[in-house]
Length: 228
Length: 222
Image (tube, rainbow over the protein chains, first blue to last red):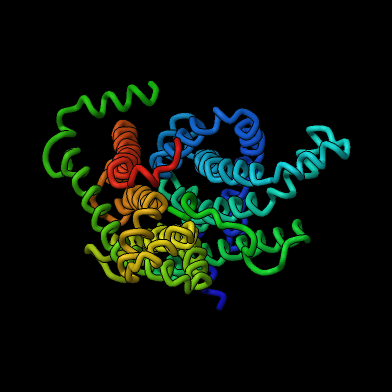
């Protein structure tokens, strides 16, 4: 059993170390994407004319293959974690902006009017009314972003072993150790499923007024997203 | 030197336009992988999505397929298939198809189920059979969304086929992977430019197809 999780020493991490690294490389960009997407989406809601061009730009950015994105950044950020994390943050941003815009726009006019009538200013109305009602849509976007981010980190292996669990793929091929490849694929998939499940739990927790049960009442983000 | 200089140097070198490692050959390989994988995935995803959408069954199973399809690391899957099956078309095609089926299947199903029921009922009222309802009313109306599912599948295939170069396959990814090994940054940037260009071209093709194929009455404003 011990052998299964033994790592070649040049990976410089134990198995659990790689898992931690993988989570960091995948989820920090998702958070960064969320932090950038919230104000950008709010601008798109506020100024309607802004949304179509933003949507076009994000669609094109999302189409850029991850490996191409990574290698172009090498010139600026070197062979580092940052080179992997920047594109992942961009992809997350691209998935999240439409999710947030749709979510915030779906808040009924009467609800907003009621909030204003209760004396809520624009900021409190945004934080206490619009965001919570948009939460299911935002979390659906977060699920897509997080899961595909976890899958994409592995590609970072190609730019000088920056792929965390993906680094095991290279090690497995080099030393003819199928065990490492299996381990990489299975642990990455399990990680993605666990994070996805956690986000579902989070959704149930932040929206106690919604009926329980997976996804009911929310429309999954489909056209965009999905792993690459 | 910045990126543009590298790209310029790469495309200016006539050696990069000839022989088995020339740009036309690599581009052809990449397009071939993409079309093959998209064709197989569409042959699986479209009929199943249309039928389940038409009958309104199997929603939960599809949601499960969508989630698990997304969770599978495509790069790892490709290396795994390479180890298991060796050199050949299958280790590239299997991950690409596995990757492309969920978006096509799920979006098609979703497109069919989110249709306005009134025209569908009207079609039945006019005496259309199930097949006619499906192909003459539901399919044309759902087409924009179905195409968007095919589009995201195609984009993902283009992107992932790049990575196939790591397990010794052709396509534009060759330039990136070889360039990285040879420390030839010119080649790397050239390859990245080509792949990004192909991805954007894919977007444009789908935009054009949507313009041509989607009935004017269904087209959304904007």
